[in-house]
Each structure stands twice: as structure tokens, then as C-alpha cells.
Length: 332
Image (cartoon, rainbow, N blue to C red):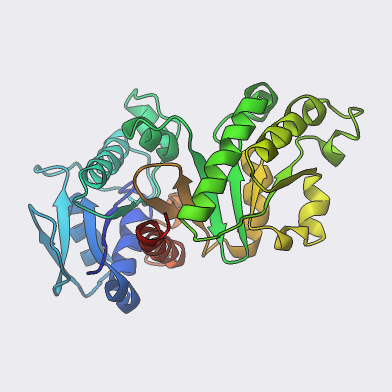
């Protein structure tokens, strides 16, 4: 039986609905899963008409077990939404995007769907509504009551997890601790084995400072925090090496010798990965009891509604979710 994948629509003023519809139109997707759209029927119908996409949409109450000609939609709103304004920030778009994520998470926790793929949303749109919001990763960790998790970006040539996620650069150092890094390494090691079927994963850890601090001359985080964390991880039988200076590690191609990398902050890890595959990278939340992936790009308001958004990353995210679901069934 094909896994059932819930796909949220994202911010309806961004490219989310467009790439979702284009993805489910792809013949390769229906071959591997049963895609279920989660969001507003009005929104999906609006974009299908605007972009002249040839597909049939059907609002359903229950999750279908198999594919049919019509693409099923689980609605999160039963009433009509305000005017759709491609490219514009809207608190209503933000609220509906967040509600779609919550609905998909609940369906996943209740095992009504096997996994979820989240289209991009705009944090600013949700903040418009006065709701504190950091990111979908943190939201899903809260919904699933998961304390230890990791944002893991994957590509055919590289996997990068982050020790810290959506925080200002000036706060990175104070957020890092040996405990935080050790827990991220533990989550990453388990995920590589369970979710990616890597029997003996090798993990590299990056330093925080230029040249990994040069023995304390350019910062002491490596000596005081990162190296002790690596030692603790090794004591837990995790195959980990580092800390490596980030520039030389990526520039020399050393990353090719490891199954995954733990970066200390957001851009340190995501820039090299996106250089390798901006349109095919996937964001996976490791450590959750549910399977969640997403494309590795944002709402792209500047091209919303123009019909030129590339669905490659969300197609990759759907494929990755299917692989992870299958691995979890067979890897214990």
C-alpha cells in the first residue's frame, strides 16, 4: 500500500499553492504515494484556475486509501477566505498556513496519514496576527511534545544538521552548550540510522569561529564547548570527528567523506548545501515521532501567481518523506 502524504498549502499569497499543485500533477508522485492536500479548497481552486492547471480537486472528509483521478483536499476552513493577493503579506494567509500545519500534524499523530510535507509560509504573516512564531520546525516540536530534535537539510551530496536554528548571530554563542551539541549529535546519529538506513554513520562537527578558534586565539567556544561535546558523543559510541574550520571543510571537499555534518548556526550549514542543490534540497525535522519534510526555500513572494515557480524542491521533499517512512518500517 502506498503511503499517504499530507501536503500543506503554505502561505496562500506565496508560491506554496502553486508548487503543491504542480507537484501532485507530476506522474512520479502518484506512483509512490497518495497525496492529500491540506488547506483551503478556495485557495487551491483559485490557483488551479489562475495557472490553467488541468487537474480535478475534491474536498473530502476522510483520508482516501488509494489514488483516484481527483486530488483530495482536507479543508481547514469551511468558509470563504478574504481576497487572495499574490505577493502580499497578510495575517489571514499566515493564520491559515499555520492552521494547515497543525491539521497535518494532528493527522500524522493520529496515524491517519503516514507523513507530512509543509509548503513555505512567511513568519511575518503570522506575526501580523500577534502570534509568537519562530518556525515550522519549532512549532512541530511543540505540537508533538518533542524536546530533542534537529533541523536536518538533505541533498544527494550532503546532509547538514544545525545546532542552533532561527536566532540572531549574536546569540549563537550563548545558546551553544556541550549539552545542546551532544543532544543534537545523538538525535542526528539515531536519525541517520533509522530514517536514512545508514548502519554506521560518520558525523563531522564544524567549529564556530574562524579556523575553529586557533586554540583559543579567536574565541574559546571550541575548547570550552564543542570539543567537550564531541568527547561526550564519542563516549556514547557516536562516530563523530571535529571541530573542522567550515571554510576549509567545504572548500576542500572533505564533506564528501562524512554521512552528515553538524553546523553551529543556520547560514554556516545552509549556504554550502544550497549551493549544491537549491532546487532539490529538502528540510527534514529529525527526532519527531512523525515524518515531516519541506522544500528548502521560502515563499518567493516576488514570483507568486506568475506561474513560474519551480516545484523541484517540494517534489524532492515528497520523495524523501516516502523514503523515510519506508525506512522507519524496516530499520529498528
